[in-house]
Length: 340
Length: 195
Image 1 (spheres, helix red, strand yellow):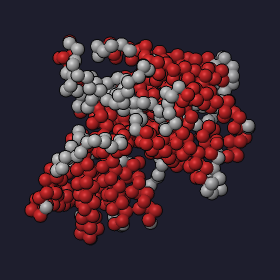
Image 2 (image 1 turned 90 degrees about the vertical axis):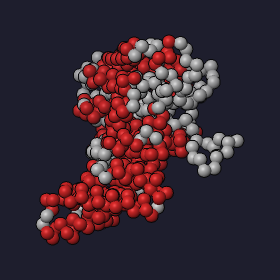
Image 3 (image 1 turned 30 degrees about the vertical axis):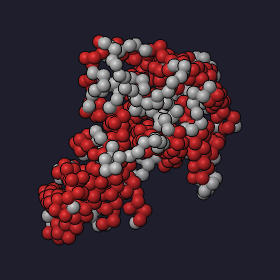
Image 4 (image 1 turned 135 degrees about the horizontal axis):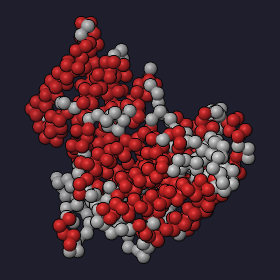
């Protein structure tokens, strides 16, 4: 902070110090962000198809709040207003995709405000936030309004779905009533999980749409396999080993991978450049640890779904992981007797 | 029994982490986390003092205070024992291992009046007065949990040094906000183990 004191801002500062990663490329933040938004579009459309107009309203409220908050705070802090870079849009979109459809609309608005205002702008704006803004926003409203945030509705595939019946998510049913009840409520479970025909948050249901978007992002090399694949494989392995009722190695890995917000979290939120580690080997550790925490919370914890908390907890550790696993700088001798 | 010990250890380190779930010990927490080096020094000193202090207080509570029926004096006595022990450690270290003293000694003065160091013997007296192993599990778990909190916080705060935080939030205010957010993340551990 000493490098660019406020007094100097009148003239261009000579030396700008910013935190990593420092990469020279023709990609811009705006281009990446809008591409990620585009990759999420199929899943958003699927949610509108299943949950109807309520989903549209949640999406609209979140995105609108995000952009207004971002612009207002940047204006207050006399910074350049950068709403057009799409990062606020993405945060709003992700929060909306993490909410149930028939939620009272002030709740996602509060979550979005906290996400953008406190988690992102207070820490210095894009690039400096410690936690994934969308996840903090969601965690806050989940613990503040637990009832509204866990009342999910039946996917009716009808545009006017305002009075859709409530229905528990597959993971909640599994946690509270067991497998028999789950199969009774959700026949053809894998097919429905893949297509998104199940109760759940807006964006987490349509696994196939999320996977399409993720594949696109991976081909464009905007995200790499280092975080999401270890994350998902760890969840699969750990639930297969410990998730079954009849003992070890009887758990249903495929169900656990598709049932919660894992695909959404692993590909779109754990891969956040800012809040995850940037060293490759640290990213793999990050993914595996996220997976272990997710399964721990799902099978042992107080919440049916653990992806959000797992990523948030690992966000705390990301700077430490980067620090510990940074590769050695060659051609630099350590002075004897003088540490750092 | 051993399962209980392990449960107490994990619960006190993560689920009921003293900083992120019970909001104790914040003065040291904010005081030493500006740099990783001080955070690590404090972690070692703190965990050591915690273990020895808790053991001392456990013996005094079980073999002196319980037979004399003066359990109601525990706050006063525990504070006295901790203060005396830390002061003694300070003096002895200075004499015997000056090198170690200059590395860790500065933290000892801060620890004397720390609330976690007092909270652990008090919790032990209430819940695990019958078992030394359980008391030690609580002390070790709390010490390591606090160390974990210090090291995470220091690593994030060092990164935040370069962040463009609004002027009125620079320094301590943003650290408080940050601690609140970490506490929110650590809520994920809640309900995992019920004691």
